[in-house]
Length: 219
Ligand SMILES: Nc1ncnc2c1ncn2[C@@H]1O[C@H](COP(=O)(O)OP(=O)(O)OP(=O)(O)O)[C@@H](O)[C@H]1O
View (cartoon, rainbow, N blue to C red):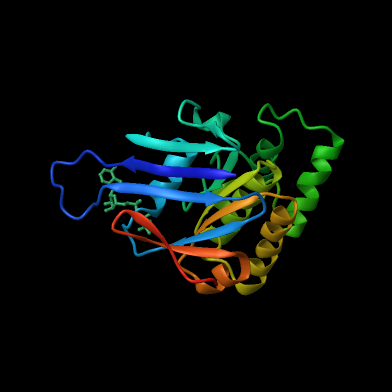
């Protein structure tokens, strides 16, 4: 179970302007998918960055299965992320970018190579394994990033608009991959503007308003 309780954060800023002070409370059980919605600038990426450990909260509780994550660096948190920028290594070909999800040291045995090949076929990228990310379309890069994240098999998946720029067929394939993860008990926090994605994947949804999460009616 992911839990944030009164997780507070504010950006240092000369102009307090429109950015609110953030105060996040949420719970997410294994196998569940919670969607977070809100207009541009409301704090969705801020929430994901706090959970992932790229931002440090001022106060509050954040943890997984009762264990606080406040003192854990990002790489030790039991999660994987697919953020808006696809975060691929530009100088490495597709198959290595995916392989890094299985083994950060790239010690890949025959079974790992098979999983990479099968995974690429499942997301419609067979034949592109030797390309560099710059030679892929935005949607193809997004599929590589999602595949790499899914192969990591961490219990929490943070998704920030992961299906934007994909056509319907690819979206449906990737939805199925995410549903498979949920059936295996992976908890999913999905930031999306897209009601179709939310209806297809989420059990609950909440809106981010004035720096806080407000749970909406059932999907
Ligand atoms: N490094 C920063 N310093 C100061 N303010 C910031 C910083 N990063 C983000 N903000 C402000 O914090 C607010 C929340 O930003 P955030 O990126 O979390 O929004 P978002 O909901 O993810 O937006 P989008 O949907 O456009 O990606 C915005 O008003 C933004 O201008």
